[in-house]
Image (cartoon, rainbow, N blue to C red; front, side, top):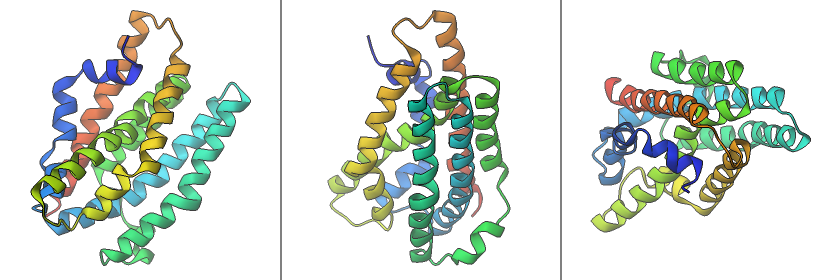
Length: 221
């Protein structure tokens, strides 16, 4: 039987294709993405990471075992102590003043997705929350290697090589593999059809909101 992530993707193939092969994404591989669109995305992604940390805090509240609680704590620490700092450095390389990031207004597309994730986590359990986060985490885990292969096939440089390297790299890929194992454990061996349908709806909705997140960058220029 396919793992839960594969089953969820198979439940909405057209949406998943539209997300992972969005023009914003493909533009990073061949270098045609307008740089102002990428800068706007970077700024909003900083604000997204803050909400992502809140989602892990909610995961801690929803935890039913010490292992789940520790995982949530480690997730918050990874974002607050590592990822945000790396993101600030990345923004600086793109000419974005780090001091301006926290004062930025959230784009409606950013608010829609992040608040949806938090709502699903509050209304459901730990599995509902993680499924709402999957299009982001595991979607980037698919997009990164695909763009790396596409860029290499072209044999040319792209200004987005740093972003591609981050999400195609071994550390991020290992984190994705670990997340896949974790959601399988949360789901258990006998997931009822009705429960899967609930999770598939969450996954589909979150994927569609991720599509709007990419589009947000293109619409900003």
